[in-house]
Amino acid sequence: MWEDLKLYGRERERIQVDRVLAAARSGRGSALVLSGDPAIGKTALLRAALDQATGFRVLRCEGIRAESGLDYAALHELLLPVADRLPLLPPAQARALGVVLGLDSGPAEAFLVGAALVRLLTELAAERPLLLIVDEARLVDPESARAIVFAIRRLTAAPVALLVALRDDPADTLWRDLPALARHRSVRRRVAPLARRAVRPAGRAATIPDPHPGRRKPAGPARIAGCGR
Ligand SMILES: Nc1ncnc2c1ncn2[C@@H]1O[C@H](COP(=O)(O)OP(=O)(O)OP(=O)(O)O)[C@@H](O)[C@H]1O
Ligand SMILES: [Mg+2]
Image 1: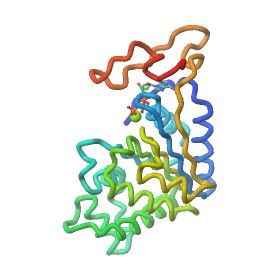
Image 2: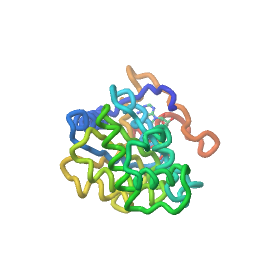
Image 3: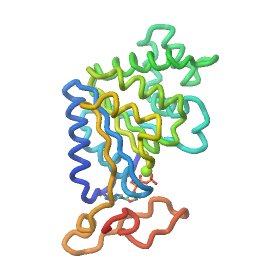
Image 4: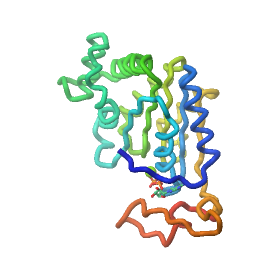
């Protein structure tokens, strides 16, 4: 689980997250794609969304390079906490997701996986609103990305919210179909550099921890969150 984070600024983005969550609470499936440069604060916004999502069941996954060539790796991570719910599904769908979760052998048929995901998420969302979080989405394996997009496009009338974060322009990725096909329910937002005033309350410098220790050594909070530009 992510550690607690004191989030500076980002009022507009948080309002947008609130809107997506409110839509889901009222039974309208909704998605928000956050894109922006490395270390600009996308994951920080996802972490903050956990506090905003009172009453939601949260399922999360993160794309990582080592698994981006592994079919359904991200979906496996997303669904592992609800693996015990497969019996809710018709047998063919349960088998398809059983393969994804490594409980069954055999190739997973993409359409069946998508259909099973729709059904499983619908069942889960009937219990309480559901928040799906996909971080580092550009590194998510394509099969998982396709299955999630497939499901979200069909969950227009279910209390399901999806938050996606990625560095690239979503238009260049499989995630582009989320906002394009559901214009009024999903939004994309380019996360801009944090305003300097947001991280220096009352004129004092605030310290934002190094996101990637050892990888890159920004000089201070202004460079880490890209603020003050
Ligand atoms: N608004 C903020 N308030 C407090 N800390 C922040 C804020 N934005 C970013 N940070 C901190 O700055 C660092 C970089 O942010 P984050 O990891 O969210 O960037 P990112 O956009 O997800 O980067 P990447 O593309 O590499 O995943 C983290 O330590 C994070 O906690
Ligand atoms: Mg991140």
